Image (cartoon, rainbow, N blue to C red; front, side, top):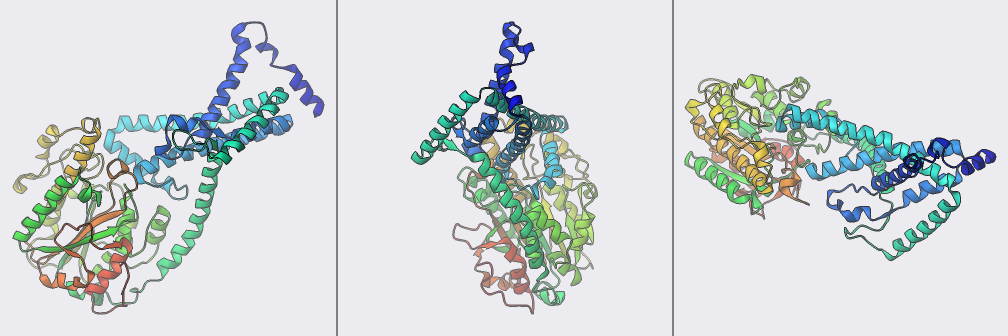
Length: 568
């Protein structure tokens, strides 16, 4: 083996690269240099968007020093094998870094390899609905090509650099020692780049260790969650007893997409949104309705609305897809199943769903589903939202809230007009003109396109605010036209909007209001300490979203366990 290594070192570049022709003679060193630069860039790639700056690449990655050292000490076969494996591992970590950046931008958290891959289909659907089918395909192809390139080029680069280190052992050894000493010195001194990152870097190893730790914790968490889900203080309680205070009431749990605390507090958004909230307060007040409001802390941020829906309904913190799948496969008591067992007709109004979701509706026990096709809308599609919220609510009123003998209704209503990309945006029409939705064509033709809105960050923020205001106005119009004195509304956001709107380090808080005409309903929740009206202030109570179900059962039931202190 030693003789082979000596021959390899002394042979230099292959003869074909040393024929005397300038370009061919330079090809080997140039490729080696490119491989070194590629490895340097991959190792220095941050995994957080705020670290993406020129300074991020002005660092000394310890992993590259170790790789060159391995090239010096390992025999040829072992060297090639180790370099290939490390190159492939680096390619995987580069993909994880890129996914971390994307998740932090959209959801303000890093990538979860245990649950996030299952969102790929939903993510592509949102992308397609936001930018169009052709662009979505191009983006998907580009991402696939980039991933394939990383998986091919980084192992090749690692093999080439380690082979060059073996051929030039003395120079490589001197370089490894010198750079290692420099790395240790700047690490001790705490020298940083202009981006605030340490010049002495081991970030790739750190990112790898973090994801391995998170993966192990995720596996343990799944077992802990299943035990938590199996323990339900209300499992043996009579549904009629849980909901005695709402007998005869039509109860609607209305999720307003991306309606987060930032909408009420950010000075760039609040003027538009609070004006809509105040219009709702005035309009509903004129119809005899009043409300109480607070904040809930959502389990998700920027998207993945079904995690919030299931958290509110089950009283469990559904923070990821693994927990969601586990609870859907369980027999956990939900708000919907409790209402159904107590004699209410239960429906899910989810116009954005166009595929089969029967496992979900089966878990909740809904009697009927109004998905995209069932709503019967024949107008244009407004971005991600296939149906304008006003039309969705009008359909619910026409089909489920007709005057006359009928069982009381419980419905979860998912309003989606405030879903990204917030353009094109519908506007309110005369309720008598809605028809099958064809009347929206003129509105669609006149609305700003997503391309026009997303060309300017200020326009994006305003479009978000306008979309939330539209959803709230549509809800106010619905209540005014329903003429249902027995109506009780639980209106809340599912999550904060993406970081492009919410900014860095935003909370997970969303507004929630309970609205009713019968004062006895609000008397039941007087002990919650919620604030009067529909606009919670900065001092309003904040509960975990998973505290709501049990508090709700306790407030409106005739029996059940004490919940003193839960969610406070």
